[in-house]
Image (cartoon, rainbow, N blue to C red; front, top):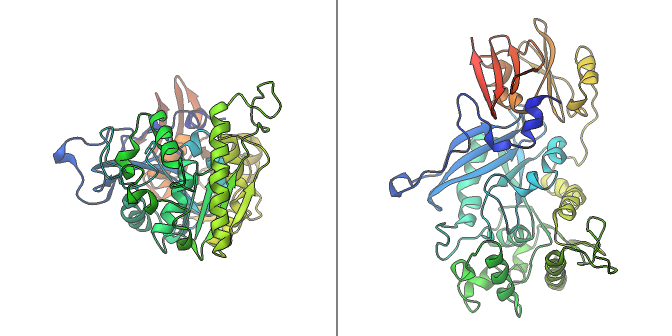
Length: 442
């Protein structure tokens, strides 16, 4: 495996290029607050994964959003693709989404023809517009995700208004809430272990406890006290009728120890006590929500697993399990097309196991051809022959317009250097060292 590819799987946000500085702190102070939505910075992490920093006037700061670009994004530069937003859980981190950090979303969606949108951050925020700031943050996630971000992605990143939402735990709640509160925004909504009744007896208190436990967040700043009408205005159960016409998916475990849990020595009991309790709560609320949908004659695909706790391996499973339904709702094929390497690309593919399986047929480029694999691409021209490009070097190359840009086609494979790796191109070199991929054009 190339050095730059290996590091790309573990230190994603420490990398940049000569023309983009990643990881910079968002502007602070009144003067720096954005006045209109804009993409301020884009850092290519691989040839199909991009980190964006987006100005959000609603939140008064920059928000990081990562994209897993559709399978054919490079092969069909004029095409546009549906969007699937994947929402995180209560402990959403500020460096990258749990879907790439704790689950296998990047590899799984590599052969899917949708662009996956991963909002980063927002711990305990329920992707809502909060009543008041808390912890120095002005959470206005609903405005950001439904109003500010989509036009930018449609314009600059070739997404369409065919959209879906899926999320785990807090994100599952938000998937249903956002879908119901914003008619026409999505065609598909999926909840994996979401809390789908927010106003039943004891639920506001349970949510408030979980928010405090996740980082000291105050539920009163979000929706007010439990008697405030904002709780019902964001309750999937209360909003159920507004989900008519959407493709819906709901899943949860039972809370009993499952195949991904560590047994505690008592039958059915896991060492993940908190995960057991949360999944029981999710199952209870999901059953109530589904019963309401059934009463309203709204179809929903339900997967109640006989075991499993509130933890990432089960959400990774549901991501895969729910994909055929998501694909159908978004109008894309569920399976990748047939394709195999041939000609000059074949020996390269056979000799570089890190490339993985083939994702696309060969496609034409100006002056050559390319073929996409799960781990990167192989590019060929008559002048250079065939060479693989992947990882952060591949990201820097794509960010510089690929072979159509100043670098031209690769003339060598990636080679190790002290502290990193480098790769030669017709008109320059990309050097990966100290967590940065830098372009040296000639």
